[in-house]
Length: 335
Image (cartoon, rainbow, N blue to C red; front, side, top):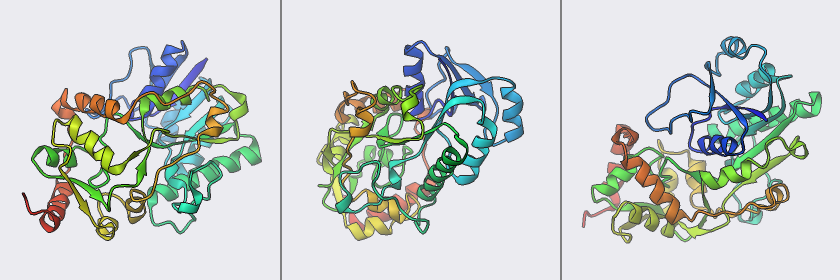
């Protein structure tokens, strides 16, 4: 099977490429030929096609007459990008898997556990990322219904590998560095809400079962963790992985967590205070053998080992650092 990955060395996609290689598939990757220090290196088995996906003419030239059994798009974030992808790749593949996000699900307790038919946020949603993914899904669905474009939508759950997902502080190394300097782990509310962190290696083992499966065309699936932990337990596991005191946690009020801007939108802050509980029945009806294998405690130790293996991977954002300092100044006595 011949597969093209668009954005193949990211937090999630690198492991999907790895699984495809293990299956003996012929793997191509469309990228700009530049690997950031915060990403894993492109596997040597991969055939690279060098072009910027946002440059339509350059992509068309780079692809030439190449066609693929499956194309996996991990970096489509808005309606315009979706329309461009459909223009470029119509007639180029038998299946087009586009990555959306579970963030599109409306956060209300009556909708738990989340299922693929859970109502989504509307066009008035405040978060540009969520709105973009909603419009990506709509654009691909319309292309499937109107023109038979062979799309499959996949929504990753709360997934991690090369990043330390922090409820306050974004996904760079800024917040972890504050922890290493002795600051407490910031947790919104009482921290008893349930989280479902899924290692990208486990995600990939489910994702690979969708590739080339004709029954999945026109369908949507989420792939999410089933081993639930509280946000407090998640914080403790991260602290332990950093060889720090697992009890060094500071709870800040919900209202403050929702007020914080610059890290996430108010919608995403609010998501960190809801339960993350999913029903994986639909994906398991396609990938029968799939189960989550990697615990968060195990996976996050692997993440920290990767981050500490090269200081260039520890990206710091000075603006985030200043905002964290202001939060600590307000809520932490420094004891």
